[in-house]
Length: 260
Ligand code: NDP
Image (cartoon, rainbow, N blue to C red; front, side):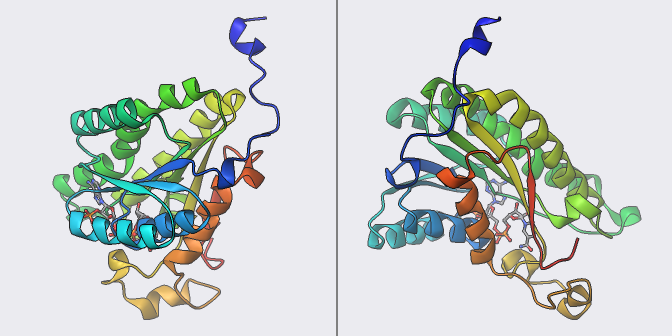
């Protein structure tokens, strides 16, 4: 038997991971869904590594809220599309503080247009931020996560657009579907190490990202006839982070009001 097979790492999780102040990195936690995830995880007893690209003031506000909830946090700012910057920031944070229990790859953008009008820039920016952004963040963390020899969590924010394809979102659908493939493959590689890897695929959620969406049209596609709230996505992420979800891996969990 190869030596890696001898590691009895996939046994049920016996550690009190949920309430022991484990650290979780949430990318794009200055606002929207990422902010709701950070606050929910703080309520659940985790400490947070908050991340943003440019709105440090907004991330600092989230950090203050976490303090009032009795949690600890620190802030990292970098562009997830910048591989060198992500590597530098994450490696130096881990070197100083140790590796995290989990990472939520949430930072993302969209740049919608009918395919003939889609620009090269729209394609490149959306792929680089959403898909390369996952690689740029998870790659520096993967081996440190394994070396902890403890249960861990990698959760990736996909989208209903990546599951069903969306008009005007060829770039975004490609990136979000790519994430689902990456999650499935990485989950297999890390399963024996008790590191679960899952995707969450929200539908239409009330955040700045959907500010410009024509809601009347969108609601026709949603059996529940309402947009979701960021806290509803955060609740799913919180469950996947919990010890109770220790046997769930390689999955995509839709949070979309029955859209798909
Ligand atoms: P918001 O636009 O409200 O927030 C986006 C967050 O991502 C911000 O914190 C922003 O940081 C950060 N971010 C964006 N680009 C970069 C970058 N290049 N580098 C680092 N950070 C970046 O989005 P939502 O909260 O609505 O969306 C969060 C995730 O959920 C995204 O991946 C999105 O695709 C996905 N999603 C959203 C849906 C929705 O209906 N809202 C539906 C399905 C999926 P900063 O504030 O510093 O700019």
